[in-house]
Image (cartoon, rainbow, N blue to C red):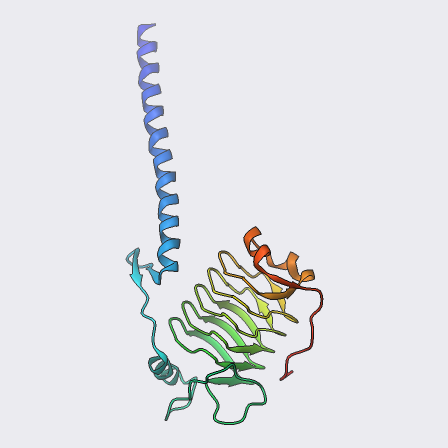
Length: 230
């Protein structure tokens, strides 16, 4: 009997030890996940090879243009001018950075500073715009498939009449973005800033939004007028 009791005591101590270790493991994992999210929002990204956080170097406009030339996405020569307002379909020259009736696929466009860019009638597929500044860009009448806008700045963009399929908007700045006339399939808006976003109420069920985001959005009863360039 004494041997049984002694064995039970040993078993109980071992059980309590592993229970504590297990709980500490869970708490540590939650801490790491939270810390990673905080650092990501401050301009850091994960080096998956070395499992460390590294600071993302955001390229300025000149550096971004040089990179786009290296990727054969814009022509060599003088850089396109950095416009002082959102580009439109019927703008006259000089044009800023623009992509019209083309395909952009399988390319990393992270950490760029290319605000007020024009995208029209373009398929954008398997492209990363992580941490990229695209504020005040015109992104109407495009197909975006497997695109990653994590931590991107899309504030004040016109993103109407486009198809968004498997697009990540995680922690992106979507303030005042106009999404009317657009369709969404399997898109992720986790942590995105959606203050002033324009979208119709009927699309609410497609977006899987957080309560705070629902309160921030400027819900519309109708789609309004179609954007130019269709």
